[in-house]
Amino acid sequence: MIKNHNTRKLAVTPSHKRAMMRNMTTSLFLHEKITTTVPRAKEVVRFAEKLITKAKPADLDAKKVLHGEIANKDVVKKVFDVLVPRYKERNGGYTQIFKLGLRKGDSAEMAVVKLVI
Image (cartoon, rainbow, N blue to C red):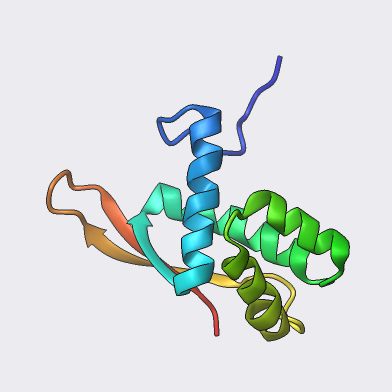
């Protein structure tokens, strides 16, 4: 029996969650800052940091891995041209989460996910 105790379900199917993580990570890499709920922020940080770590060798295999996860070619180019050199000497901790408070409509706790400069 498979038990997924290490991740959040986020009230969506696994395929929807994977697509959502890919889209949110693409937006994070493109704009370097996104606003979302706290549980989604924590999941997107896990996903994004793994992708940056996989991209750090900057070889052909790393590019294939990133193209498999991120569909936007401009974002993949930005990762290899801007983000990988920025985090070359850093061993993890590429993102920060700042809590904003409650959303007005449904009182969901909101957060900003930001790439560390």
